[in-house]
Image 1 (cartoon, helix red, strand yellow):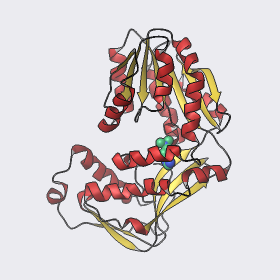
Image 2 (tube, protein in one colour):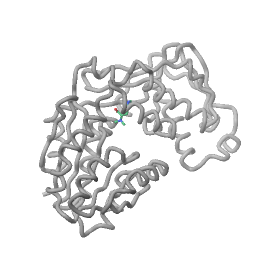
Image 3 (cartoon, helix red, strand yellow):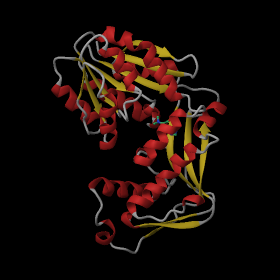
Image 4 (cartoon, protein in one colour):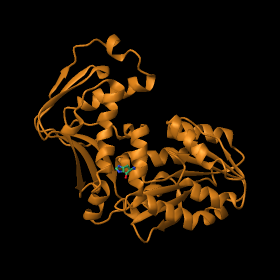
Length: 341
Ligand code: AVI
């Protein structure tokens, strides 16, 4: 993550004594990349950090599902309401030869609300794109009973997956979904590049439906990311638990506090894990021993919040036209439909 603040005391990191061959034996290719990224993030001299994509192992995905049910976390329900309200309209816009590709499909529970409305009028080819095999399997199971839906999971990164989908369905109009305000987890500049990259892959007549959480009062945002039940705190701490499980580390989970800030100037929630005492953790698979001062933080996630006009402007700058923008009445949240003309 770019643009992170300096750690006042600088890094306190020592190389681990164990050798690479002993510590990385038995790791999958994905876990080796995980270990490299953990190493890079915890050695960052400006601010210790960990990439938020690693929240979503089996435990983290289950915790995220629970977060979506929390009364304080309005995003998921707002996205669902908009899909229910405008799903039929989307079917009318795209006609009868439609393929839907979803970037980061997760379990497909929310997408079902849209797909139900689309298959009511025509046969639909659905391509969930996700790196997680269990999520794709769950998504296929959750949607298997929908009539006139052909599901073809794609286990790839978003843009690679989209390229594959475009290669195999030349004869259909494509609607790409990027739901859940996942865009908010990217830096603003990265989001702009991402939109432009999606635009370059699409053809005239194709569309891109983007969900994004909107700016709202600080108190509502802080409650959404620091719920009284502590589900989001567990979700955040699970990142260290995952490093312990998969990379053989010994982070004392109880010694890290879930910390949430709203950064007004960047219009984003920032999540951290704060060491409650000075401590040292070993991460053998990353060949790392890392020290923490009391109060030192690991930056784990950014959740950017948008203005509706800003989203439209981003799409236009990426080369799309704006076909529609729908706002939820209960929780400020937007779905913007961009088209390639
Ligand atoms: C997945 N992503 C859009 C969620 C969000 O709101 O940024 C992840 C999350 N982090 C804490 N709570 C939910």
